[in-house]
Image (cartoon, rainbow, N blue to C red; front, side, top):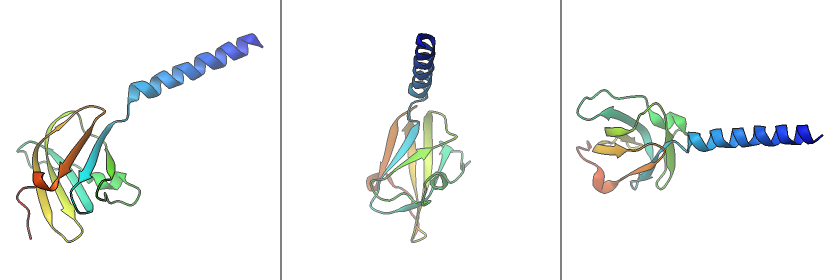
Length: 115
């Protein structure tokens, strides 16, 4: 019986350590005043836009003050292309993205908006 308890405890500790090592991942915090319906990242100045990250969200949108898990991106510096419900598109340039961290974009960060 004691062997089973020790084996179970070892298994639980190993699983917990793996979860801790994985961290929470990279997350975008929408501090703009509108709901984001499209969020894409590109290496700075490359215009090589990745997938629409809002598809990672349950309702496929990121409301004001909501956080969105970002996938398929390595830490570094990026430009962001942000689309809103009213078909307005804006850019945020030179965003620093760190591993297992939250980065935010606010209205003051938006540049080159159309409409």
